[in-house]
Image 1 (cartoon, rainbow, N blue to C red):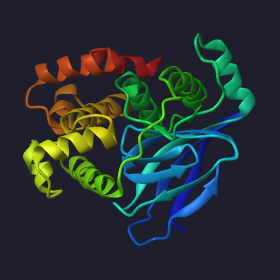
Image 2 (cartoon, helix red, strand yellow; image 1 turned 90 degrees about the horizontal axis):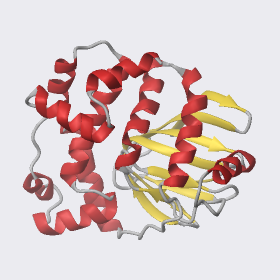
Image 3 (spheres, one colour; image 1 turned 30 degrees about the horizontal axis):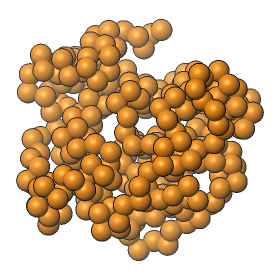
Amino acid sequence: MTTAQKTLASGLGWHVSDVVCTAADGDKPFEEEHRGFCVAAVTRGTFRYRTRQGTAMLTPGAILLGNPGACYECGHEHGAGDRCLSFHFSSAYLERVVIELPGAKRLGFAGPSLPPVPALAPLLAEVEAARERGDNEAFEELGLRIAGAVVAAGSSAVVRTPSRRDQKRVAEAVRLIELNAERPLSLTELADGTATSPYHFLRVFRQVAGMTPYQLLLRTRLHRAAVRLRSSDTAISTIAFDAGFNDLSTFNRRFRREMGQAPGAYRARRAG
């Protein structure tokens, strides 16, 4: 068994699970079926996700989308293991969300995923921080918010299927970023790791991951900082330096831009 799934919280028409997969290259891809609507936030690792809505390589910050009754397959030929926070909704639950959102006209996802979306970054950090704190009571509200946010973000967009070679290159780079986010990483170093030119690597990375390598590096640092702000009492300056920022003013400015609040204000909200 390569997947461990733990239910964190549940209610009428919804539940959320912490899903940890240890599958690696050489393990046979496994096929399952979505029993309801699924919105899963990738918090670590990369994997290939294939369903009848298309195929996507998912990276940290991406959102897996699944429709009821749809068969799907996850593969790890480009890297070992991943972790997701997986929200599951009944049709009746999600239909109520769609009805309440102006401009949302359909129930169901046309594409297999959403790339990392800046507008969702603060919410995803809250979700992961709730998991780290063991604050399972928060998931009732967080589940409703993430359902609405995904529908509003344009979940009907169809994602272009990347080649397997490109998936592998980007997966290798994403893992390098995950392992070394606290230190400087140049585009040249990342491209060298995939044996491609910086220009080609940048183009392929943006196609597959939905953002540039630097944007992912910065988002990874800010996301980890946001999780620590919500789940610990460590000094803000320590969190900033540990995340890879060289000075506090730069961290404060970028955090406010990404999360919509200053670090101190963001931390203060955890008591609300």
